[in-house]
Length: 87
Image (cartoon, rainbow, N blue to C red; front, side):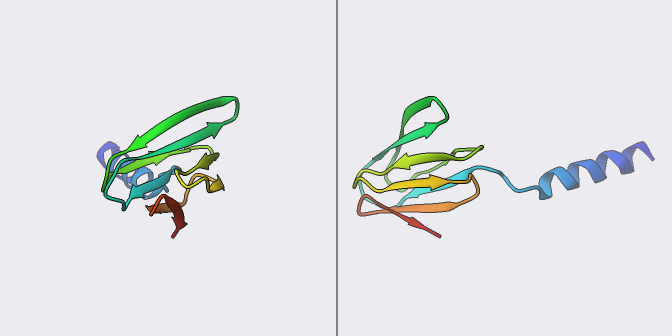
């Protein structure tokens, strides 16, 4: 029974959403995003073709082109020509 409960709990945890936004840089050069979460401000560099998970609790981002977005934390975003495309 203990094995069944452990397997069930792991299955439920794996099925939960990641609760962070995923950003993929489709450009040929690195992109730097400014990420503001609450009182915290940081820069996140994403390599060309790279993907990063950000904003587990929601945040605001500024892209290289100056786009500003508010995120809940469950979005999929692509950086194309320095701009954000929310999927």
